[in-house]
Image (cartoon, rainbow, N blue to C red; front, side, top):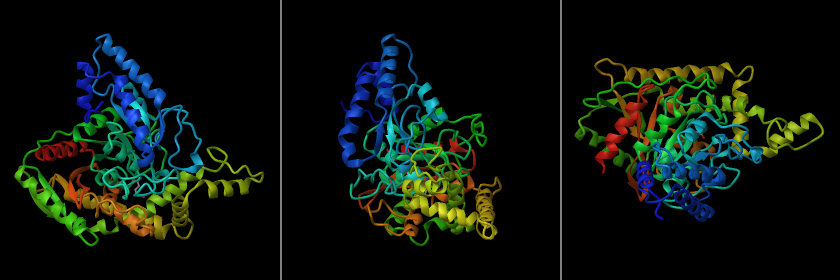
Length: 472
Ligand code: GLN
């Protein structure tokens, strides 16, 4: 069977009896099994769980019970989010055989809503990377051009959606890991405001930046998933109850930051993005050039704060409590061996950088200073979003400086880090941001980024939908 493209297609098809949930789920699983050898977007399938859920939904339909919008919808989960009873590797050798002992809050919510969890997707080790080349379990290929990367770190989730291996997927975004792969693969990727979605059961990378979010074929589907998984959770103290902000979508002002079109941006991508942004005036919005003067420091600040938090969060993988153990009889050698063999190069690099930035004598010069500049970056956004006459309602910018690059092209870590230049500011400031497909450059998909004021997640999604519909 041809797999449906959207959540409402699934819902209508199931209700009308065009296909059963078992049929749909089996077709999905078969397509993955056939194509995963090449694309490598899935690390594990949760086949039993998926079929059990699908059977339950078919039962409900045959008893003529009402089914909710997400029932029967196949969802792929980034493999740093715990699904009880299944392996959760975080893309690392150190967790190769780790089986999740409980469900993450987002998984509990998806299961309750009747979603069919189909499998766990590939990622850069512990979500550190921009290409999914840092996975201990092989590179993921971009279906738009298999010689290119899908972006990262949620590369597997972006590919799973783009290749019709599932309807929607969950990813995590610490510095751009949902939006950047979404842009590279031509799908929608939404990073909610920090605190909107519980991080309980997400394997921590950098706790003050990490946020779970959806990847989907359209904005409506991303919104639906977001509405199901958000909300207060006692297991995450940084999590808040979301308040729906009332907005009038008309006569809104858009800020276009000069700093997001500077050095290093691909010329054709720049022109294409500017053309798409200009279309917003036809949609009734007012465009205004703005400045985010501290954004030039965003990448440097991100790589200090993120690495510091990574070094603390990854300290728990000591070869004793979790996962891989070198089983050396001497305790100190066991720590050393387990971590040396268990972690890949990028994880080790960041642990060392972070440990250095936090060490006595350097903490003030690096970590504390980066925290101060983080505040300045946040204040830049607060200023442009102020309700005063020159304030704007949201920001438009490119998601990435270039389209997807070739596998193996970026050997130098610094050049890899530069692909996050337009995505990290929203993480540092805790803001909601979405990437939506906005055409192609040399045949490769690119993304338009919409950034909104903190906790105005609904506004960001509504604006994205207006733009998406205007393109249909
Ligand atoms: N690419 C960025 C990094 O390597 C972002 C990762 C993420 O958002 N998880 O840190």
